[in-house]
Image (cartoon, rainbow, N blue to C red; front, side, top):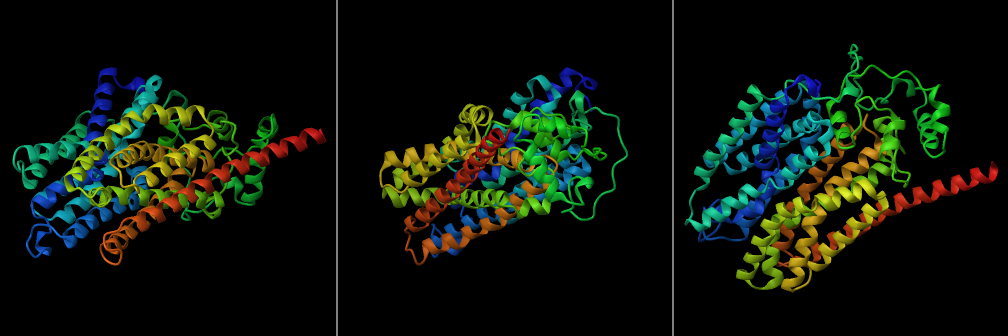
Amino acid sequence: MLPADVSPARRVAQVAASILFCFTIAGLVFGFAALKPILIDQGVYGDLCADGLGCKAQDTRLNILFIIATSATNVAALPLGSFLDRVGPKVSSISGGLVFLAGCIIFGIGHVSKGYFLLAVGAPAMFLAQFHLSNAFPARSGLILGAITGAFDASSMPFVFYKLAYFAYGGFPSLRSFFFFYAVIPVLLIIQQLTFGPSSVYVREADDAPEVEPAPVLTDPFAPAHPALAESPLDSGISRRSAHTRPGAAARRGSHRPPAPARTRRMSSAFSRVSYGLADGADDDEVVAKLDKGDGIVGVLFGMSVREQIASSWFWTMQIMILVHMTRINWYLATVNAQLVYYTGDVVLADKLTDAFIFLLPVGGLLAIPLVGYLLDARPTRDVVGTMFTLGLAFGALTLVRSTGCQLAGIGALVVFRPLFYTAISDYAAKVFGFTTFGTVYGLSMTLSGLFGLVLGPLDAAVKGPLAGDYTPVNAALLSAGALACASMGWRVVRRRIRLEEGAIREEEEG
């Protein structure tokens, strides 16, 4: 659907509604740090304590609630992306709204774990269906995309407001009242989709090619992205990568490129293109011209099958980075108050620092948008990884120090690192693997990270058991793993650049 087919007023309303629902639904479960004190005050899992006033068993069970929810969100990425591809954004949004609505009601009637799980699964089904709205106003696509992702970063804020109101008004509203009231929001989402929601995906004018009969769906999900590459995908991938490193090579191979397969408009691929201003039918040369910042990683695995991409060191470098840093981030989100009590030795001060963290997490995500945009738009991947290394090291090291100032500075580093990490990793995936396989490769990566995230349960049990409440061994191990993961990715990028420069020098000498 072209933007010109819909009135400007209707498109403005659609974008505004999308931003509103992303702010209130998309990342709500990540506001757990704000919700947790209310759950404790309301006696959720209080039956695990002898006096019902709070104990390690209750804290552990609440942390597991968050761990399972965040893991479910990531594990659902691949199947929900596939579902979105098949049914379109309207059905996906409505389905996500229904699941989220069920989560609110079930949470409200007292089934906390089941309700929170449904909130975690329903949100991404809605969120993934919003990115195409960047094309509703092509000249403002970057601004719209930034607003949508910024709304996601800030979507823990409703729980922050709830916490402030709850303790200001002596325990009102209760969990039951809050979640029953919050159920109105997914209802409004469903009404919006049924009334003035987009009937199909918005595409740019360049995408509006004559429709072609869809190609037969391959039963093997790891089949080559381009049928013409099936005979020798590895050789073809090498030739394509080599062509990207030599001026004029793309032009020389242009006449030999196989005919493009019929397009089925895979929506996950289209969504990943939006942030780069690329048409749905853009070929590899256009992608390289748009994304390459001179570090040589763009197009390194273009044209290769999903199986080959997943077997590559490029994938596992990214995967280790995701496993380690998502574990670090979610570990801190789940245990922030307990860690601050341990490192400051003052419960009242820890509560104040926790409140600061709860507020800075969404606000910091919004304030970090200009920095993230500058790094990804204007700097090579080497600088992006270097910035992540610095922020990740600062967060890990500062939060190990028994000082209020260091703890606050460490929190500041985390709230900037978090949005940069999530955005930079998807940027890396798009540049290295390409858009044709982006949905499958990145979705698989998120699914694996979700499964790995379940390790947080044993880590929490270890701190409360054998480690006797000492968070330093776990934090130090995660800090070391994070530094090694960043260094590994940085070296992978730098080595690629060095090899390309050496190849260019040899070609000049031979020429």
